[in-house]
Amino acid sequence: MKFHATTIIGLIHNGKAAMAGDGQVTLDDIVMKGTATKIRTMYDGQILAGFAGTAADALALFELFEKKIDECGGNLAKASVDLAKDWRTDKILHRLEALITVTDGTRIFLISGNGDVIEPDDGIVTIGSGGSYALAAARALILANPKLSAEKIARQALEIAADICVYTNNHITVETIK
Image (cartoon, rainbow, N blue to C red):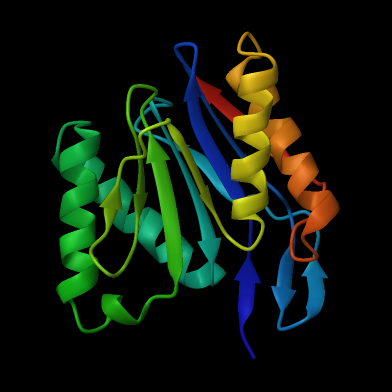
């Protein structure tokens, strides 16, 4: 049996960054919690980070990323690459089952234990079970109304994902920066 926490969307749009996460945590196919918080601010509110996957693993990664961002003086790209390198090469860290996304409002990355540090072309990162639905919804929302705020796009995209994905609920937390 595995605990999983899903779905996160992070985006940079019109000069602002937003990250939204649902509140659902599942144990296999059982909803164990509906009000989890999967997003946190770091580096004195200058960075947003969100996770999907096994909760304890993701929280360990948050702690490691916070150390990296401090060591790198707030340099998001360097901290992301350093975390990915450690995560991939360390025998214990390599077993962690989670994905994280981070943004400083200028850049946004998806970081994985496979060594991936991906900066999407369109400034939108989604992770977790409902990620594909949230990504499609966000892109459609931007096309339909490019003046929508990053916060509204993130919230509405996750609401749409929650209506489709059984592992995503509508207890949504949204954080913004810049």
